[in-house]
Length: 160
Image 1: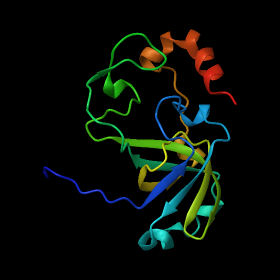
Image 2: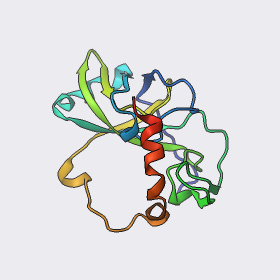
Image 3: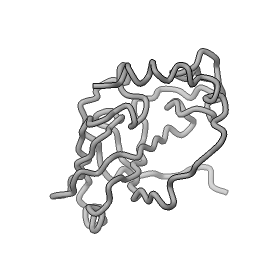
Image 4: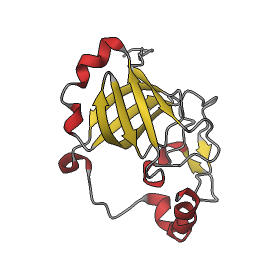
């Protein structure tokens, strides 16, 4: 087993979101917020055939997170929860993922929408979203099942 892992950015996200304060908490609340992913030259050939997808998974590094916290208070809750039961960014390895909408690919750039990612965020991988494989109907969502009455608050906060 290895004690370290090396991760290289393949590009960087450019968006209008400069700070985490006021940023959408998930892509579903970032409707029509657009951005561009600048893919670094050695990886641009890997963009071939991506343009035919409606959504892509972005895997990225939360570059503004300063410390790991094992307990966090999620936005839609008032109780401290274990980090791994949330999507909070203060992770031991600050890796994030978002299923953004793909608008177009051209000249080494990916134009995207439904962006909930801060400007300058390093991209570490891209994967196509396949509705046949990436969509699961579930019956349980843990602690979130008990905060559905607050869903309207989040919807109103991030509507444009």
